[in-house]
Amino acid sequence: MNKILLSLTILVCTHSVYADFPLPFIPKLPDLPMFGEFNPNKLRAEFNQFVGVDPYFDREHRLVNQIADAVLDGDVEYLTLKNGREIFSIFMESEADKPKGGVIILHNRGQHANWSDTIKPLRIGLTEKGWHTLSVQMPVLGKEAKYYDYVPIFPYSHERIDVAINFYKEKGIDNIVLIAHGCGAHMATSYIEKYGDSKIEGYIGIGAGATDYKQKIVNGFPFHKMSVPILDVYANQDFSGVRKLADYRKHLIKIAGNKKSAQMIIENAQHYYNKNDGSVERLIVKVADWLDTL
Image 1 (cartoon, rainbow, N blue to C red):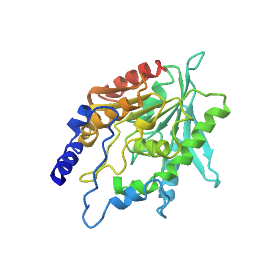
Image 2: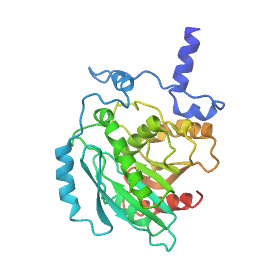
Image 3: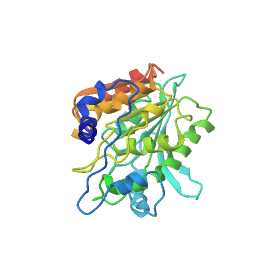
Image 4: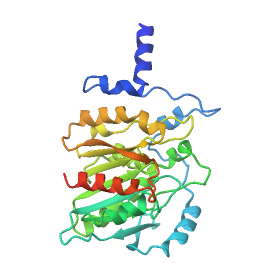
């Protein structure tokens, strides 16, 4: 019996088999291997809890000061948290006479709300497709911080997502879609894991599952619990961790059963959609076309 259980565990850890399991089987993520002298299972046990690890607020402040004056497309908005802290964001109105709704864009780790690859093209490009966009600055750590370092600060992203949603609600915009890239997707799904998806009308994850060398994803994706449509997008040359977990994400999306949900691959693209090779334009088209199905 132990050998059978071990074999099943090995199968569940292999990305290519997820699609073969019958619905509604939910693969359980295996225990995390030691990372040097650090046991990442502690991160899993404390996931989505405040554990005394704070973001690097001073670095965020310096980063915002560097980029705020460079915003030429859109308006800088400071979203106020309950503790009075102001969060930098960039709002850009739709070019359409009848806007379709509002999207909230969460950037990748190590970047910012006006990052020239992926984020800025998305927040501008989607306004041309009929959507308001709000790109929100997410919590940051030092330059050398890796995925495992970021997991404890995921809860600090939750209130930022909430105030971004409220920003649209106060404008009378209820058709709100959350779009998140890389580590922003980790933060978005940690929010959904804790609070559900009742405040949004759709979710788009771009390059979800990105970690670092020998660092495994700490918590699974909550897609099987979600009721809103989900779009899972990744590049054909994306990080190996993103590609290896594609079947797992697709399986969970199928369990949720929303007919509008989909998984898409962007050809001739990498995790960081470069504006110079045309890949980010292909991403924008895919995202906008899917948004039109909502």
